[in-house]
Amino acid sequence: MCDERAFDDMQAFGRGSVAVSRREFGVLSAGAGLAMLLPAPANAAEVEGTDVVVTTPDGRADAYFVHPTAGRRPGVLLWPDAFGLRPAMEEMARRLAKSGFAVLVVNPYYRIGSAPLPAAGADFTDPKTRERIFELIGSLTAETQATDARAFIDFLDAQPSVDVKRQMGTMGYCMGGPMTIRTAATRPDRIGAGASFHGGRLVTDEPDSPHLRVPELDARFLFAIAENDDEQQPEAKDVLMKAFEARGLDAEIEVYEGALHGWCPPDSRVYHEAQAERAWSRLLALFETSLLG
Image: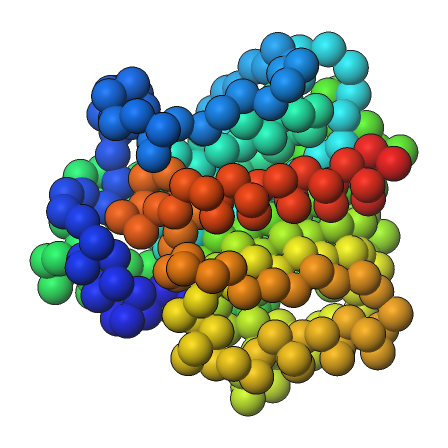
């Protein structure tokens, strides 16, 4: 998960803010070249997106929902990284929607406030910003993740653009990685595929460790692991693989060479375009096989 080491890695590779505004993200995409661009898929579907509010047992969660304008498509629940719901995550959801999915990306910190949290333009080199981010992360528990997953899945299933006859997918970055396992364990009847990108704390010694939920799953999974995360916890990938093998489920577990924790979102300071694109291609292969059939 996002920790002091991850912050230090990001700080060593760039300068600027943690999150950018919609306008700033558009400027960066236009002016920074391929490193900030998200290529459109071949035969991209026309999509429409909107800000939405999802009612949960704990309040009203702000989120962004995007889907192809025609037809009913498999739903996907996207859990963001520690920097939360922001333009980069919305753009990633739009990109996935263009490949034929109805995608909900959520603000996991809605109990504290509306996105963006931390505030757009926050400087994570500031100790106060780091403290704020860890405070936000600390507001989430295994129980809140399960409660939210149920509400978000129910929201997706209630949308006319979502094909409820098909299984749903879930994906997550950084702290969102373990949320994908808990989501799939909470609703194994609906989740048929999950993907974790540089997910943290997937395997712990705690009684609520995500890997202990694998016996409850009925979903194929992809785990794209950062090289430095693997160096810190090399046994985690083996524990995960054994858990999936014991359950009889397919799991693609790979360490991405040269990729640091946080390498996938295009607004990350450690964004690795080539490896991010390879991870995205594996995501599409998983979802197309498991959800589109």
